[in-house]
Image 1: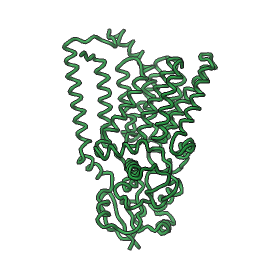
Image 2 (image 1 turned 135 degrees about the horizontal axis):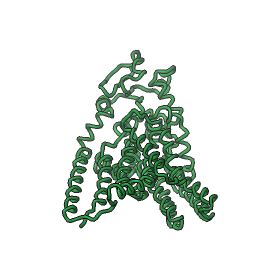
Image 3 (image 1 turned 30 degrees about the vertical axis):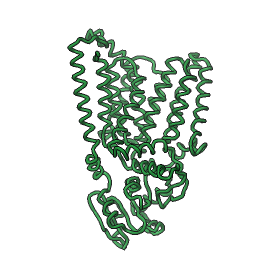
Image 4 (image 1 turned 30 degrees about the horizontal axis):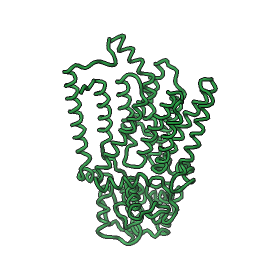
Length: 481
């Protein structure tokens, strides 16, 4: 079988993306998703109220994630955290498969831009249901881009896939609203095309009908019409922007965020130097998602999905012309027998390298060592051994982990911001910052012990009435005297 150099470049691209994504991907929020999946399997129910905290116990909790949380728990139960690491890598690669289909032109430009886009979106990769939003956003971009290239002649056929994906999306993650943003971009671009007489009104009508059907698909979930308002409820929580890093503007002094800046510059350079007219859909997708990424770090991934399409559309003709006129090269070349053998050897070596990378993130020991650096493993072991009575006040960052590691202790707070809302998050902030009334908050909630990071403001105030029973570099456990 012949392995052309162009095919090798494609394989290298996706092997590189898989290798980048194959890493320790379990974060604090992963644990509460696993706990929810476990709870659903044990009870045979989808939760409609909170069963995990004492501050919101019994309060209405309608989270659109059951379709992913249950399989996530299954993967973890069979393969451990290493299985979730590989699941994350597969989902990332799947998203970029859809994006590869939207790119065009020179193979080297496509490969380079894809790898840069993957590096930029790496800030988003974690074993959480929002990976479904990453994949489905890419699928929506591909489907709408395919319809645009076909002048929407296939809209009825492709719209079926949009509807199916929306039903799955709504039951997987609250980011399904991104699908409507993509739909809105192509609808608005179509309206501009109709005004400039490039499209007939039938296109606009079909897109509008598709949007109404998509809204109907959102209602196909255990909570019904309520899900239509869910994205607005989440975004409306001011504490997200004030205290939670992934909802804040990115810090470009951090090296893992800088590929986002490079990708923005590459888009600007490609469009500026190509001299080609920019499509309205490209402008709204790239510009809109770039703005969203600048406002909240978690949205960087959305821009990373749109940038390769724009860059390759504008940059590929420039490089093709340079290769042909200056270097006398063609973007496609025949392969000799010797070159074919060499290509297969290169591929085999790369596959071996990727497998070696997998062995670093799949074993239980590797994951446990990583967890000790990011979770209060020692403090949790201490609590399990001593079993202090009463209620725990815990760090927000560790709430999800405690739901899994200490299920017998309902938490004060965890990563489910849609449940706790601003009111309780502000109470938590009051305590950890030692603001006026922090003692009253602990008294009102009958807190008897505290698990928190060393160095928090409140730790310097816990001298009277509290005893430090456990301390390590990661965490402290304070118990009421």
